Amino acid sequence: MYIKTEIFRNFADMNILLSKMLAHADPSQVPGLARFFKTAPGQYGFGDKFLGIKVPVTRDVVRECWKELSFDDLEECVSSEYHELRLAALLALVEVFKHAKKAPALRRQCIDFYLTHTEHINNWDLVDLSCYPLLGEWLLNSSDRSLLYDLARNGKTMWEQRIGMVSTMTFVRHGQLQDTFAIADILLHHEHDLIHKAVGWLLREAGKKDKAALEGYLQGPDPYAGATLPHSGLDPESPRYQVMPRTMLRYAIEKFPEAERQQYLRK
Image (cartoon, rainbow, N blue to C red):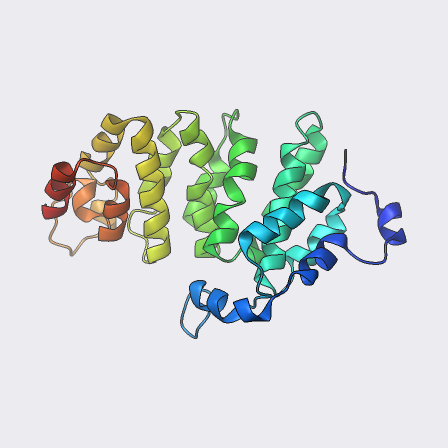
C-alpha cells in the first residue's frame, strides 16, 4: 500500500501533511472561520483554533500527499488544536481507506484509528466529511451495524452521536433505509439543534430514495413517546412528525411539494 513505513518517516524532516498545510495558513481568514464554526463562549465550537485554510485548499493538499503519510503523521495532525489539520488528517484517512479495497488489514487499521480518535472529531464538518466514507462503507455489507446504534445511543459527545446518524448516508445511497429510520428514532428527542439537523438531513435523503417510506416513518407513532414525554400531554400514539423537533421536521420534508410541507407544518 501507499502508506509510508516508519523507516521512511524517520528519514523525513517533517510531516509532509503538516508542512504543506502550514504553508497555506492565512490569518486574514481566521476570524470568519471562527465565527462560522461557532467558537465563541457557550457555542458548540468554543475553544477551537484555526489557521485560515478553506476546505477546497485542504482537499488539494490531501490529494497531493496522502500516499506519503504514515499513521504517525495522521496522529500528529488529527490531535492538533487546529481545526484544519484535524480535517486534513481525516480526509487523508478516507483516501487511504478508499484505496485499500484489496488490503482488508489496512482498512481495519483505518477504522480502528478513526474510532480511537473520535475525541478529536469535534465539529459537524469533521463528522460529516469522514464518517460515512469510513464507517458507512466499512459496514455496508455487514449484518452487524450495532456500532452505529451504540454511538447514537451511548456516544460520549453529541459528535459521536452525530457519527452514528450520518454514517448511515452510505446505506441510504444504496437504497438501504432501515438503519436510518431506526437510528433517527434513538435521536428523535435529542436536545441539540445540530442533532436535529443531522437527523432531518438523513431522513430527507432517505425520502429522496423512497418518499412513501419517509411518509410512513413520519406518520408512524413515536415508539418512545410514553417514556420520553410523560408530561407532554401528547397521545402516546401521536405520529412522529408531531413530536419531533421543528427543525428536524423542516429538514426531513424539505423536498416535499409545498402543499404537503404546509400540511405537516400546520399539524
